[in-house]
Image (cartoon, rainbow, N blue to C red; front, side):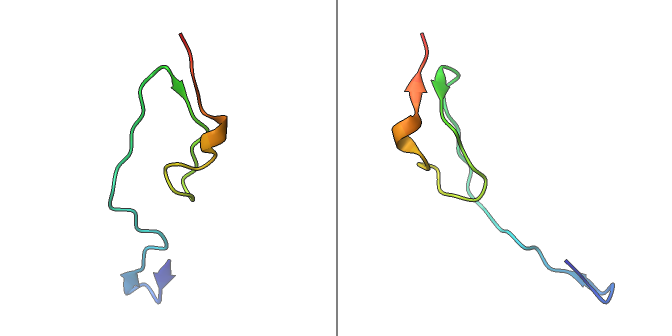
Length: 45
């Protein structure tokens, strides 16, 4: 967010990474934690 053209203040800071296997279908969200909607995850063959 620009503030008087002096500094830029980040609105979101997420220092960790996450990953899943290619056969796992998981509706991930950038705003929630990594296990969001865990009940809807499934693995394809």
